[in-house]
Every structure is written in structure tokens, then in C-alpha cells.
Length: 296
Image 1 (cartoon, rainbow, N blue to C red):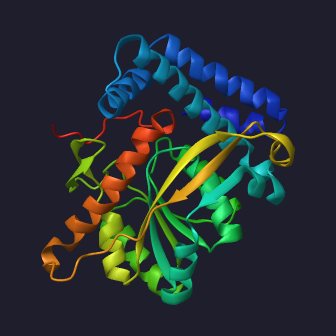
Image 2: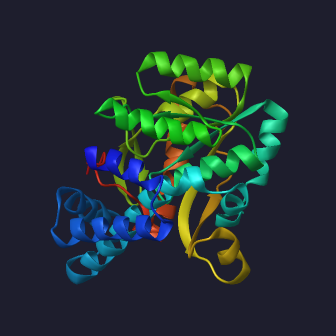
């Protein structure tokens, strides 16, 4: 984490090419030395893809490159122009989210730790609606503060993950100011995860998005994020070889007649089933470097 703080300070003056090369080298080193993060990534990739041996190592190499790309872009984000942000993002199926916000004032968008969710936030604030999200409080605190500063610099409102107090604040903000309530929820930090089917296995995911959608009275949409190569005019406008896709699923709803006590589990199962398939399809961009909530 101290290395990350140093990188942030250096990124203010270093050329972008140097930032990208340095991040890429760091990702390669973690992979070739089989660091703890790489080992955990391989365990998770094996689950969702079934790959083993050389194929798994190839996937994890691409996965660590994707992780490095995310960190390089995070360091670059304060220096990106609005035009570069817009050029780097391609959307699929986001119109219903815009319509839901126009109708209800807010929408809950649930994401996995895939692609570049911070670039998604920057784009969404510009092109769709203001974004409110939650971030894990990291140690040292300076790292958390830096992440928050970068995200708030592109228009997002960020709350620290501090249990029920944070959830009450989200409900209040959802009802009063609305917009996009975006939550990373494939990794459960609450300790009260909901058991669901995810990428062909049983796992526990965070109940927050479903509970928030019900409490605010707005729709819930899953959103997959993954990288794609850029070419031609879009690549020149983006200032990068890589862009991201914001791929939105349909609204997840509770069927009529579902007992109120089962509503959170039903919504969670719906978004997790959809998200698990997207993670399978774009496994190299799933940055799950920590223990995941597998239960089988």
C-alpha cells in the first residue's frame, strides 16, 4: 500500500507511458513470482473456468495484466480529459437504467470486481446520472483517502464501508438525491452474505444491493465491465489501446407472491446468476485477488 501511495505521487509528473509500463512490470512480477494475490486469483479462475495447468497459468497471466491496467488507469484518471473518458467507454443496454432514474429518481447498479469500475463511475457521472458508492476502508488510511479523492474528483460521492451507518446513509441519499447507487457486491464484506449460484458454484455475495433497492423503492440492475481493444479514431481519441464495455443486464425483480422475507435472497440470486455468467465469459478481467465466498 505504501508503494501505491508512492506511485500516486509519482504519477502526477511521470509520462503516462512510464506509468503503464511500471504497472505492467509490477503485474508481471506478481505473476512470475506466484505472489499471494496471483495464487488466489488462480484459485478463483479455476473455479469459474475449470482451467488447470498451463491454461490456468495463461489465464492468470492475462488476469494480472488486466489488474495492472486497472491500476495504471486509476493513476491516470485525474489527468484524463472528458473526451478521453467518453472515448474509452462503450455501453450496452444502459437505456433502461436512464429510464428508471427518470421515473423513480434512483437505480441500484450492482457490479463485480471486473474491468475498471472507477472509469465506469467517471463516465456515468458525465453521461447518465450522479453516482454514489461505497469503498472498503483500507489501511493505511492514506490509501483509502487517496482512492476517495480520485473518485470524488471525477464526480462520485464515496462513503466508507462502516456497517449499518453506511447503509442508512445510502438509503437517505437514494431517497433524497437519487441517481445511480453503485455497489461492488461479488465479495461480501458484511459477514451476512446471501448464498447464491455464481458461475456454476454456490457462493455467498453481499445482500446490500438487494436490500438497498427494496428500501429505496427503485430497480436493481447488474452491470458487467470488461476490457476491449481500441482501434482507429476511437483509440486516438481515448489515448489508449484499451477501452471498457459497460454491459447492463435487465432489471432484477421480485416475482409476485414472493414472501417479503425472501425478497433480498430472490433479488440477490437473480443478479448473481447473470453476473456469474458474465464473469465466466470475461474471466481474465475479474480482479478477484482475495478469498471469495465459495461454499461448495
